[in-house]
Image (cartoon, rainbow, N blue to C red; front, top):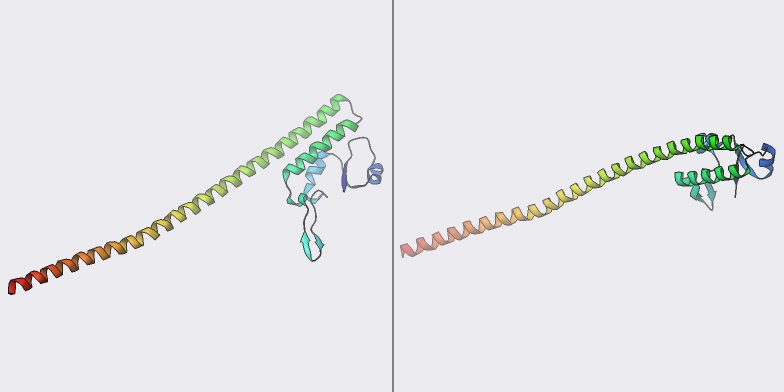
Length: 166
């Protein structure tokens, strides 16, 4: 499993590289800023003629936030900072995380509204098609009934005329 390093916990670049980190970031804000180009976003790989993607390549914000939270917790455990510095660091990153979550929530609401509008339009189209499917045969039936009445009236009149002449 590849790991990334955040330079906020008292370890040097060399130590983090030696421990196997494939990328290093100044702080969680730097990681967030460079997330789209980070190793957390899996690259497509060729395998047996098929393109494969790992689960992290879905850019799922839940996985990112979960990783960010784990990283922050590890940073707190190993950070040689005073309590006030650690609280300030967490407060600033919590604000960034809240902004990120709020934006993703707004995006999800907009997407849900868009999908609901599409479903509503599809339902309206289906209802219109159903009405048309019912109304066409009904109109044909009405025409047939009227033609039958007319034929009956003409036949009745013809029989009455025949009876009167005989």
